Image 1 (cartoon, helix red, strand yellow):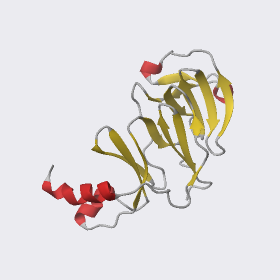
Image 2 (cartoon, one colour):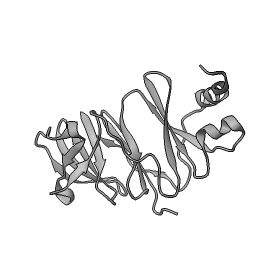
Image 3 (spheres, rainbow, N blue to C red):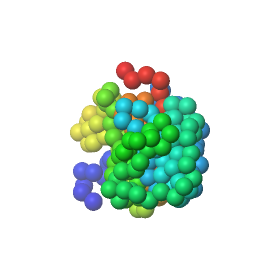
Image 4 (cartoon, one colour):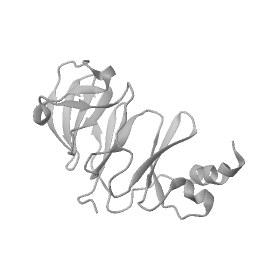
Length: 183
């Protein structure tokens, strides 16, 4: 390891899991067996979930499942797209998960999500406040961040296009954090 990174690695290793700061609130965890991929509808907080048991749509502001289709679905996942259902019918949704892809890792008001792997295979997710820069602490800059999640089976993570929702998906669960406004 490069010598100049040791202080940051030590700081990150010592962090305990914590709740995200206000205005973020945790919604109930959604259990999804065999989760493969997720993706947001454009300009929305509606999340399409693709799993071994079909597809579903979750309103991430409320945490409520709006639509469910239990039919097997395997089309276009390798192309990082899935056909929407319910409120998303007729739309091709960009997805992230088993085959790669990615959700936005920052919001328009500069909240960001950083993924760090200090002890493989476990990954930790850090929520970084606006005005902070994770690596800025190496240069004496203030940095406010929170270790909000840690797991070895993270499938996808990121913000909704609106910036009001942050989701973390594992192979069996979706953790949702939301806020009512984007400042």
